[in-house]
Image (cartoon, rainbow, N blue to C red; front, top):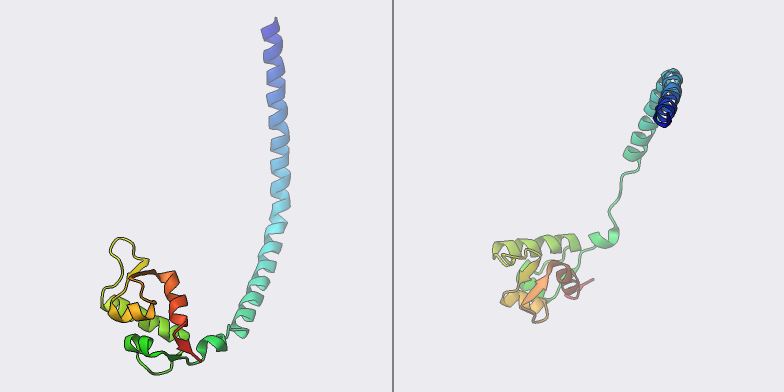
Length: 142
């Protein structure tokens, strides 16, 4: 008897769970039909507005980074003596490092300095690429 009561109670619970799900599914589908059209319409206008603002307000480069900087004599031996922006200095440094194969074979973040770079790096043999930028900035003058 106890098992018959449990199975009957279990059947009632499962039937009760299924019934609201079916009715909720129908009402949700009925509610979604008008919402889809409205969402598509508003999303289209939002997308057009976003693209218009992106094209109108292009990001301008920071003038501080575009200002030509004069390299020191130690740095000039590596990148040249002409004044150039910091971004160009970084590009020239990486060109020099790759041309002379100065990146460490196992840890590519590590740079093994040759005689010219040791002067720029303050006598250090190995420098990480993150340290390199701060060490190079010491050799740039406005």
